[in-house]
Structures are given as structure tokens and as C-alpha cells.
Length: 246
Ligand code: PEP
Image 1: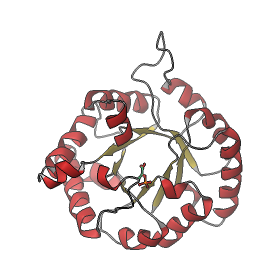
Image 2 (image 1 turned 90 degrees about the vertical axis):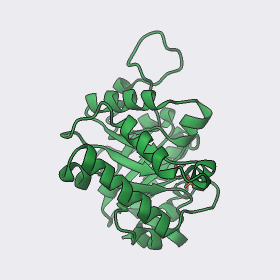
Image 3 (image 1 turned 45 degrees about the horizontal axis):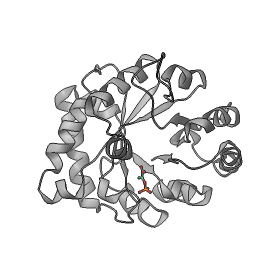
Image 4 (image 1 turned 45 degrees about the vertical axis):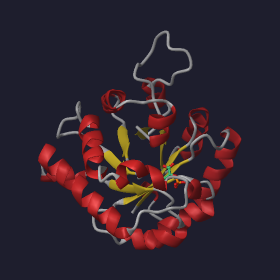
């Protein structure tokens, strides 16, 4: 199982250094290639320095829709590439809700990421209101297809299903809900591309994943790993999620 940690706006370069040194020791006998961390942009250079030579993956939490120019305060995917990042997290629900990120912008960021040879991790998810209105599948389908607008079947992506109502709330989607959605997402990928594209695309679940619920969720067919917020901020809980789900 893949364990991806979204640190959000937490961990300075110094804190990143001490976390990753500890993680390298804790993951020494584990499959390091299954770990991904998403530090804040200013801590990526430190991550690049500490993780150089290891198999632990790291990536940026967001990039700009443009590569360079007069765009004060933006983060260029070219610079992310120079830091040898592996992944870019795209379309997290906090980006969509707090920064008004649109499906079109998500599709552009996915394209820019692939053009740099990096791996996009595309986040999709329904709000509680949408779930209660029975719109979950329509919303997920439209978010996923929109994000794949500029992707071809020979390329590789990762999808993270994160119900918005489960992010940072302590409410976790039940195994049956996750099973239903992940089967649905796999089918969309088959229809849009083909069986082999769908089979090679990791489908992660995110939303209040903890050491205590990871084992049960990991048993769900079509769950290939987790995107973890709060519980990825301590090495102990992050590693314990990996252990409990593998
Ligand atoms: C997230 O922010 O992507 C997330 C899943 O957060 P949490 O695990 O804290 O719910």
C-alpha cells in the first residue's frame, strides 16, 4: 500500500529535516518506494537534500498554471522539477474550496506536470451536501474526466479519492462507501482509456486515515494506498499506517 503524507502548511525546512531523518531510519527495512511526502514548497529543497539517494518519494502540494513570468508568488513546475521532486499534488479540496481552483486549472496543472516528467496525484471528492443529494458519482465522474482532459493513455497518473466531509474531520468513509467509489473510478478509467491504463493507476483513499482504521480500509478491493493529512505529521503514526495496511 502506498502511504502519501500531505503536510499542508506545516513543517519548516528545519522541521522537515528532522522528520525526514527520522523517517529514513523508521522506513529502513520497509519498501521506501511506497512512501510519498508533500512538504510545503519552501521545505522542498530540504527534502531534496535529505532524501537524495533514498527511495522515498516527495512532491509539491500545488503548482502554478504557468511556468514563468510576471506571476508574483506562484510556484513553477520547472523549479519543482529542478528539485528532483517525483510528484505534484493537484486539485486538493482545500485548493478547490479556499483558492477557487477550477477543473480547467486542474487539467492544465496535470498537463504541465506530465510535460516535466513528474507524476500528478489528482484529488477528487464530493462535499457532504453533494453526497446527501445523491450526487456523489456525478461529481466524481465530472471531476475525474475534467482532470484527464489533456492526458493520453500512455501517460501515468495517481488518483486520490478524498470525500471533503472526511478531510480533517475524524469522519472516515466506511469500507463499503470506499469500495463503491473506487470500483466506479476504476470503471471510468477503463471506459476513458483501457484496462491497462486503469490497472496501472493507483487509487488512493484520503480522509481521516489513522493507524486504527488503516487495516480495514486497506482490505477494500481497488484501494492501492492512502493520502494522509493529520496522521502523516508524526513519523510514528505515518509508519504505523503503513505497517497496519501492508
Ligand atoms: C488531506 O488533507 O488530504 C487529508 C486526507 O487530511 P486528513 O487525513 O487529516 O483527513
